[in-house]
Length: 384
Image: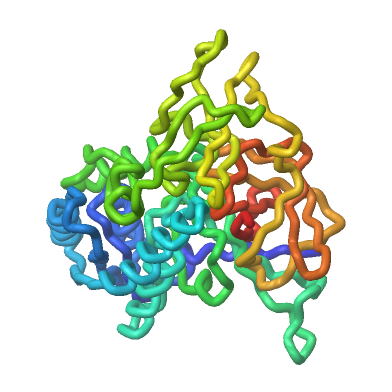
């Protein structure tokens, strides 16, 4: 089976690219690299909706983005996607919490905003590609073994989404919803580099924001205390905190404020001899209870019925457009930066399961499971 790798960065000079420029270092270096490669680059700053009480540096970020574009001598555009963000990301997030689930707004932000509204805007305005500062890579695989052929029997190329070279910064976990139609219009120039190299490139290009710290927190909104944030939109409903034997040992403010694995924000009133930190291992929305446990020798004590090894997923997307081979072994992760876990994929009555070799004690409904074949991100789904 022969593979041909196509690197867009090297072979399509002069094509028009809209860069989602946030004012941060990664998207700024992305813009500079593309300009250096003779692409026709335009910087686009995306404005999204945010609650009035959230402090966000978007005005400073926009100013930084404008200054970077000016220094690179590239056009700067504003794109207002407040309505799309409010409906597609924020409302979705609140609805999921109301259901007792823990959503991943960054995944939805990429799906609805960066590779949704932004990509649509770019293509409608004459761009050939969009580019972002994500730490991921692209391969174009032409399979002459022809598992996928067009109507004439000719092999069809497939875009593969690969993890970034910098494993600490790899963002493929957040991009599992991407499709072939989207990827053929995408560029990810910094996915080949370590973050330290990107910082050096920022200095080399003499970017005004070369020393700017990385952003953290909710996608586009910034760093927020999630419980305080949710309290503005979800009512308090005090309930009991139970140990793994079902005994009441504390109280909480409402199960929708908490997620599995969390160790703060609830009150333990009946600590025993083992005066240690408690972690949430189960939530019951109907009874409004949290079940917590402690770690012993570094391992979370948990009853068998709380373990999650074979996990059902929904809202599935396979990036290739085809279901993976169920006879192979794969790897997957249930949260960002988790070490990849060995697994197999199973399908029963049209329901996909990810069956892990080891229990995933904090697998949380609403979060994403992302499946890999080595460095290749195959896609994933949402934990049921």
